Length: 499
Image (cartoon, rainbow, N blue to C red; front, side, top):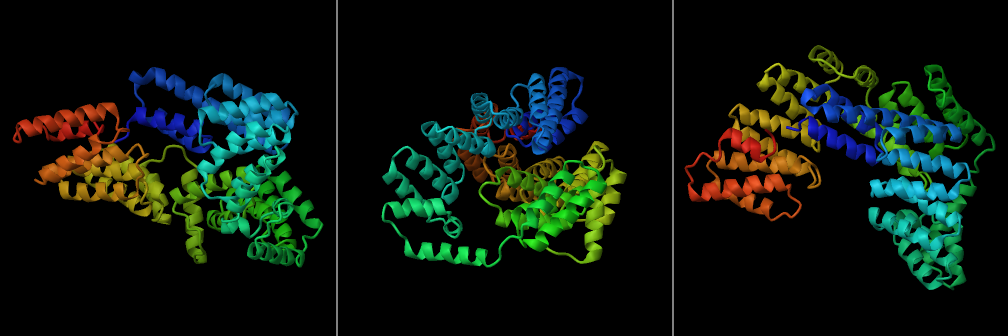
C-alpha cells in the first residue's frame, strides 16, 4: 500500500502541476501518517503546505485584480518552495498584468520547465509572446499544446495565426484547414480564420455554411447590455468568499443567465457560487454545462471547474438530476465530509448514513478500520470505494493487499484485475497491482501465467529499478527451485513495493 513517502512524492508532483487542492490534501495525509524517521520530509512537507497556501492566495489575488499583492504572495510561496510550478505561474500572471513582460515570459517558462503538462502556463506564455510579436518563440508553446490536445482545432488555429503573422502564409493556411477537421472548432471558428482562408482563395463551403448558420443564430439572440453588469457583480461577490457574498454571486449569475441563456462565463460564476454554498449536486450539473460550452480563451476557468468536479467525483456527486430528497442528502454528506481534515470511523459512518455513494468516505472508513486491525471490514470498504470510482487505483491496491494478508487469494486477484482495468500505466499503483496479480497467480498454482506476467513487466523499460531487481531475483530463484519459498507472502509484498 502507498506509504508516507509515496504520498509525499505524489504531493510534490501534484503541486508542480498546479493542482493545488490535490497537493494540499496529499501533504495533509502524509503529515498524518509520517513517523519521526521522516523528520526531513516532514519539514519539507510543512514548507510545501505553506507554499501551496501562498500560491492559492496569489491565485485569489490575481482573480480579484490585486496584481501587486498577488506578486508578493507568489514570491513568498517561492521562498518556501522554489520548485512550485503553480507559484511560478501565478508570479508570471501578476507580472504580465503589471506590464513586466520579459519577467512574465521567464516565469511562465520556469513553470512549464517544472511541470511540462501545465496547459495554462503554456497557453499564457504563447499568448504573451504573440502579443509581444515574438511569434517564432511562441511556436514551441503552441506545439506543446497541440501535443497535449491532439486534433483540437483551437490550438492548431492559434499556431496558424502566429505563422501567418510571420509571413509563412501557406503553412498557416494548411494548419487552419487541419484545424477545421475538428468538428467542435469548425462549428465556431472565428472571423480571423475565415479571413485568412479567404485571402488565399480557400473557401471550404460546408464549413463556412456551418459557421455562418451559427452566426445567424447568435445574432438572432443578442446579448443584452445588462449581462456584463450582472456578471461583473457576480465576480465581485465571489472574491468576498462569505456565505452572503456567495448568495449574492448566485443571484447575479442567474440574472445574467436570464438575459443571456447558456452564457459560459455566467454558468461558471453560478457553478462556483453553488459550490461555495455547499449545493454540490446543482453545482456539478452547472459546471458540467459550463465545460460543454466553454470558450477556448477560458483555460483557467476550465481548470478550476475540473478541480471542483474531481472533488465532487470523490464525493459521488452525480452530474445529472436526482430527486430532491436524494439531492439534499448528497449535499449534506458532501458538506459534512469536507468540513473536517481527518475523519474518524464514527464520522465516516455518519456521512455514509446520509449518502452511501460517497467513495472518499468509504476509503477513509477503510483506513480507520485497517488502523484498528479490522482487515476484513477494511478490505470491503476499500473495494466499495473502487467500485464507485473504477479508476481509484489506491483503493483497489490497498483492498487487494488486505485480501492477500487474509489469505483470500482469489478475491485479491479479482480486485487487482479490476484495478488494472482502469489504472493507466503511468499510475504509481499500476506496477503494484501487476505485482499483486503475479502473487495471486503463483499462489493459486497458475505459475506459468504468473511468470509470463513477470516477463512482461521486466520488458517494460519504465519499470522501477528496485522492483525490476526484485522481480528478476524472484524469477531466477523460482526457475532454479520451483519449491523454494520465493513466493512467501512477505516476499511477494516486497516485490510489489507494498511492504
